Image: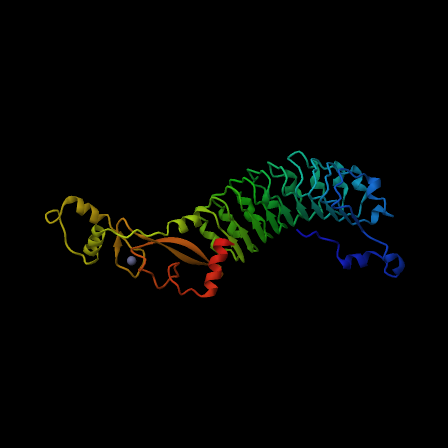
Length: 365
Ligand SMILES: [Zn+2]
């Protein structure tokens, strides 16, 4: 993920550009990334810095740090703190005094449920936090009071349950929860009114709450590698640009079951009797055949009057979704040749390229 750096505009607003000679020497960034450090104290951090109060950006990512100096709170202008790819097990309590901190990156460390300060929610101005690739088993409760958060990355942890408290996070635009062991999604997720990206891939989900259809701004929904057998019908109301469903029973079953066993001669004879409405009774044929004939199921193609018995053709019917996707739904037909002309099916070959690309995006994307 790209690190958000202070914009050039902000830089010019805060400092006097008339002093051009000093401008080249001045930096608001401390960069000690990729140095294999296992510790760095305040004096080392500020060795080449004139005034810690000017520092807006500290890069300490990709070292072997076990701790962060408590004197981090002296960097009172700090906006971005990048600590990803270290071995941090704890954050110093003093971090909560960084009143300007907007971006905090802690991806791939060894943080767990006891690692964040109790008052971590004092970082009210925090907008982006990355806690992915750590050891959280519980969703950090402090997060629910950080009402200005716009992006939260909690992927690749060990979270099994989500509290039903997400309605407080009304400014959240990106919520990444992929790669956990989450078994269900609480109703309150549907009340995160600003949500644009919701990633729930690689979990243990079987269903979504119906409230998901309230997410009017949602553009990207990742559900791949879960246990979904069905989606709430209201999902069709969403105006998505991306939807991934691959590796769910919902999709896998379609592909696996698309085989067609050729009907037996008995079934073909029985189909003909039903189609032409030939009369039969227990005086003309054995009782077992009457039971068989009565077990006929109607072909689901509305333009077909046929029936099937043991051998049906499982067909994928695509239902229009958002005008952009076609969601696959299973239907049972009497034979592969029986194709409803009013719907698109996988067995027809006259897909437009556009249709094919939509299909791939749903199943594989
Ligand atoms: Zn049919």
